[in-house]
Length: 290
Image (tube, rainbow, N blue to C red; front, side, top):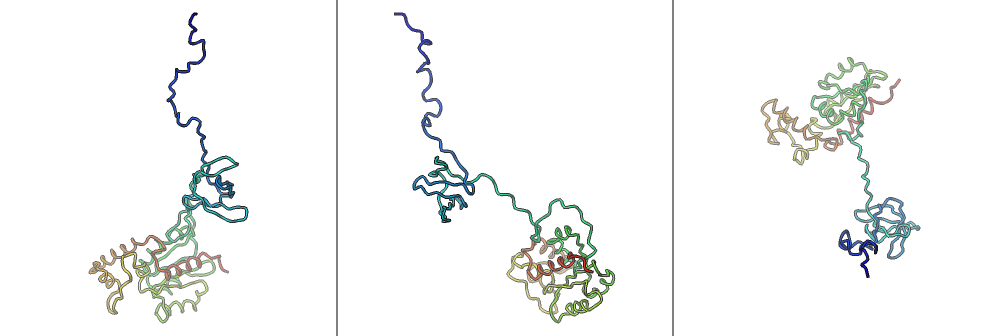
């Protein structure tokens, strides 16, 4: 009997490698991964509990049943969606990036066009005060169009206001040091309020001896600002107490730059200053008065 050619008896049953490919997975069911998106309705394969996804806590999903009761289950296998087994996993999408904030805590405005300066102004007593205000509130002030001017001491406030000429739509906000009851600063502020410019001027101040004290001492590695005896120049006394050079004026300037450099934002300042600056900004940016 003649031999039958191999190509005449169909495919070669022994021609392929039976171990080729993922032979272990053959016949095994692939369980799809499903993201635990909010409001997805799932069923527990083990006990038939049905609930909707209402939240995630670390590696657990929070399900709410039709009675409003919630239960916590580990993410992973053991769930059914539309009667089919699934592996429940965390959603892959990332949350939207948080909006950037300015040093004062306000939401930053990206690519804002330059704004014409308002007629109103904020006057700040002391160069260090002005530098601190600029560092923390500068971005906000530029968005509002508010200019900060240096006031060379509260003693010249009357002359400064006469030159500025406050009036309707042209307000002046004044920030002074050591504004406490009975102080020279308080008497001057009261006189301004009673004077011809009073309606269009707001004088506020902080209780500190110097603006340095408005920075929380913990930012400098100290629990409190030192108490300086009367008769000792306050800033030099502070430098001496902290062990900083203080013999020359350049030492004082370097000390302030060190303090200012430790300020990252409003959280590093005392509330007694924060509230007063915000009050001034609100005053000078309020709708024009008649």
